[in-house]
Image (cartoon, rainbow over all chains, first blue to last red; front, side):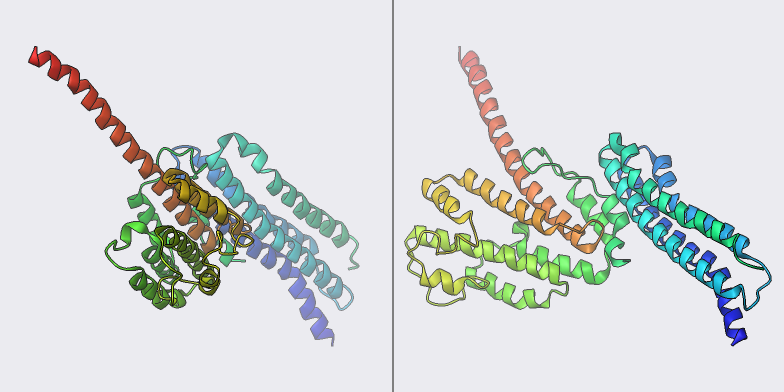
Length: 148
Length: 227
């Protein structure tokens, strides 16, 4: 039984990083494709499109920081907490990465046609980023309260 | 999730259409559009190709009969793999069937005795209500009385505008929720066709106007040469 609990602890520890990486991969891929398409159809603003398309990469950075914060000697007492925090923070970061990629793709597509809305079109992506930061910060706060 | 963003790159590489009647030319040339559409998956390209074969006036043989055209449609439509494209092609062919019925009736033809002349679910209804102005289909097609009136008035341009607007609005309605998927590509291509059709009419009008101006200018030259 203890071995299973320890294994779950490891899953939570690495899971937060792996899930957030998946979110960043998918988000950057979606927004990146839109950026490439926009560059094909326009003569300027390439840097802006690429800059927006890498916004979902922040999720994996949050995931790495949470992973290091959770890292400690695994015991049957602290493993369930590591599993719970790691898995749920990872899922939140995964979904925020994918959805942020989608909002970035829409922002790129819209600002290609109407460059004057570029800043405003990034507001949804910034709000999604805010929710990812919530998941990140409170994972850190709770990690400090785990025994051991 | 992946499918709904499958064509993010392709759609971002296509310039925006703008309003239908405000356009002076298509947002990109047919060659460029065809070039960009090479990014489609083979199964999607095939569905779009079949739709174009059935709907694109430029590809349709003007010498063939309605029965031959509808026979081809009945053969090809069930084979369209993508349901969205199949439904859209069916809708367009039904709209053309209604227009064909209006034209036949205006010509003085009796109600058709079979279904070979048209396509879709309304053939029986049209036949049964041949004498009614809108074939009792005004509920499903609110534009039908107006099309009938314009046809009776001989206003070909007004009728064409009405049909283009009807098609454009239908595409607008079904585009809801489709931003970067195959359905969005289909809607873009269909809209491109509508803009191309309208702007080509404008081109023809411009050519006629140009000819008239040249003729008017040459009249003065001819007169001075004669003197």
